[in-house]
Length: 81
Image 1 (cartoon, helix red, strand yellow):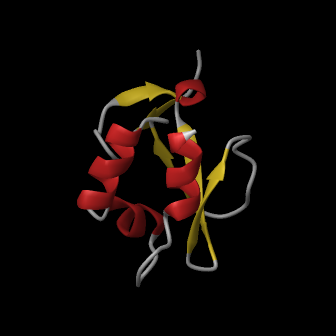
Image 2 (spheres, rainbow, N blue to C red; image 1 turned 45 degrees about the vertical axis):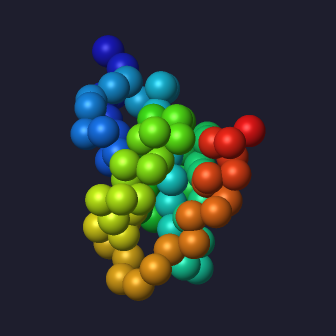
């Protein structure tokens, strides 16, 4: 049975393989496609809709336990294509 994670944008549960893991590195949000980066991670559907929901809810900072502002441009550019 595959592990299940919760998307921080839409709050829907999904298999780990269908979600994108993101981590905070020096106040930048970084996509961890292989899910091997050390530290605390958050899971997100790889869609702009879920990304925007997570931004609007300020879910990245809460899920990653980071105070201050995170630069999310790297992940946004990746999701845009």
